[in-house]
Every structure is written in structure tokens, then in C-alpha cells.
Length: 266
Image (cartoon, rainbow, N blue to C red; front, side, top):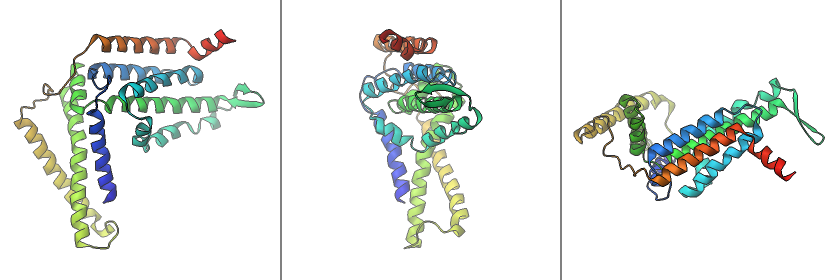
């Protein structure tokens, strides 16, 4: 029961983060979406041995954290389940690629170790960028930005309803868990013999609530568009910020900036 309430609290915290006020929160969602897509595409395009060139891409998430006022620890806490899975993707690289690539004093670093770290950084940077898009942007505004890019209305509506459905399902789980434990006081968890009926009732109840939710949206005039979403105006400052980010991404992708800076001071 406590885990369900904790999950609901975390879901509400994301809405609270999106309701804050900062330069990033006031930025047009389409600008944030395009910047995030450009950043992720740039990050994943680095070669597996370009570790130093990739490391400079951490400057973008740092800047976004500072401008949005969102603590870094909040990002890693929210992504605590996904991050280990992403980092585990490249764990086998050192076993397949054992050719020496770097010499750090008396330590020889193989290409597999470098590619493993590079792959991990790619996943972490992509997840951080995605979080920095979702956290300061209400879901309705983000869906409106997707429609501006002519993403099919069916897919955007499916994304919105899935986001809303998670909260509906968690609330139904909370209600059913309360009812179950009132009938079985002192029992820890739900007995295995009741799993089938519990999941079946959960599916039926959450489907009914989701249908009511969708019908209420239709009664309020929802037709697959998001004219009601509170979308900030696209200012010249936001466009300049996007162009500056794009220029930085292009420079970081074309040149190894840490190596160039190192050559200037050595």
C-alpha cells in the first residue's frame, strides 16, 4: 500500500515540476522538443571510441538543470530504475574488444572499456535530456508541440491517454488494495490465490475509469487537437537559445573540443 501511494506521489511530483516557473518552463515546448531531439541524435552519433569528444556533451544537461531550477538528484532519483538497465548494455564490450587503445601510465586500456564507457554515457545523456524535456513541460503542451510537427493525432492522443491512464490505474490499485486488506487484516501483501481475480478486477475497473476519462474529454470539446493547452509564446530569446545549442552540438560533433582545448594549453 505504501509503495502504491509512493508511486502516486512521484506521479504528482512530475506535474508539480512542470508547474514551476523558470526560463526553461516559459520556453515554447516545440523549441524544447527540437533541442532535445537534436541533442539525442548528436549524442548517439558519436563513434564508440570518441569518449573525450562525447564527454563535453554533459555541458548541455548541466546548463538545463541550472536554468530550470530542477535539482540533479531529482533526475537521477526518478531514473533510478532505468539507469542501471541502460548502463548494463555495454558491460560485455570489454570481453569482445580486448585490443589496446590507450596507455595511461602503466595501465593499458582496451577498446572495449572505452566503448563500454562511451555507450553508458550515451544512454545516461539521452535519459537526462528526455527528463529535462518532460519535467519542465506539461504533457498537454508537449502533445501540442508534437501536433505542430504533424505527428499523427492518433499517436499523440494515445500518448496523452497512456500518461493519464497510469494515474488512473494506480488509484484503482490503491482502492482495491485497501478493500482487500480490510477483508484480510494482518496479511502482508496479496495472497497468490487472489492474484488472478485481483488483476482481472483491476483491468475492468481501470478500463471503466479510462473510458469515463476519455468521454469527459470529448464532452469538453477534445477532438485530437490541443488548442486548450497553455503554450508559451515563442520568443526571440528562445530561438537564439535553440540556435546556440545547435551550434554547440555541431561544433562538438565535428571537432574534439577537449582535445583542441588541451592542445592550446600544452
